[in-house]
Length: 271
Image (cartoon, rainbow, N blue to C red):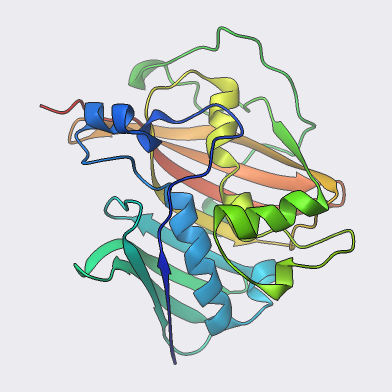
């Protein structure tokens, strides 16, 4: 089977939390990019639509994905998502249509991901406050395996719909109900890890490079979504400093997703 969709990438919406400078021109100049990067989690959000077409609606509550961000995506570029395969596992590829430049690729599937037992997120905990000035850290001082202060967000019915319409520019009836408990797009769940880290630490530009997500239950609006995590690894590669976080996303009814989030937390400076 094979499924394909296209979308024109739009500029990132205004940040509702602590802004990541990699999504504006000044921040990307320092890291050597040609312009403001479209958030990698939005590429994932667009790809979700094609993944659901291939694997079915049940994927939102009992499927998994493992995708890597390969190249930057800029506003106004046309993104084509291709999903192909047979059975319960499919290949996912997103590329800039005119240049055949792969932006994101990986796999998705139904059931339990083959890597989920490797994740070591902290136990779910209620959200907490942090006080400025927030700390920073180096590769040799990273607070490994220490639970971060969890971050909560109350998602109203209107917000759940706006996430789809305004952030992703999609018209999907699955997310357009007028009653309470509108489904929340998986893009929002995947995107909770970045604000969590900025809830706990001070960073400059950061770059999302990979997401491994095990869906456990579809998130619904009009309740608080809480994300917690701990840093499980840090390393250097080609001048970039990377970190890996294992996270857990919950609401008042329990577990929604487990996530392993990979990011560059200090890009190398442009020459």
